[in-house]
Image (cartoon, rainbow, N blue to C red; front, side, top):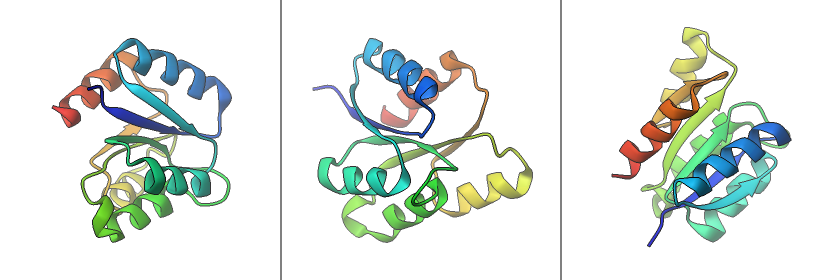
Length: 121
C-alpha cells in the first residue's frame, strides 16, 4: 500500500512539480489550494504526510499545523512545512506549531524526496 500525501500550496507551479515528483516516488497524492481546504482534506482523507506551505489564503500553514496537532485523531500525521519564510523566528514558529520538518523554498527536490521517505519509514 502506498502512503497518501497531501500537497497544500497555493502556487500552481509548485503543486504541479511536487505532485509529479511524489507520484513518481509511488505516493498517492492529494492536493489542497488553501489552508482551509488543507485542514478539511486532512480530516477527511487522513494522509500519512502533508507538504504544507506556510503562507496560504484562508488559514496559514502554521495555523493548519497547530489545528492538526491539537486534534488527537490526527496526531500521527507527519507535517513538512515548505515555505519561503526562512528566518530563525519563522523556523522556530513552524517547529513550535508541531511541524516534523521545515524546508525553505527554493529547495532541492531530491532532498525533499529523501526527507519524505525518512519521515514515512
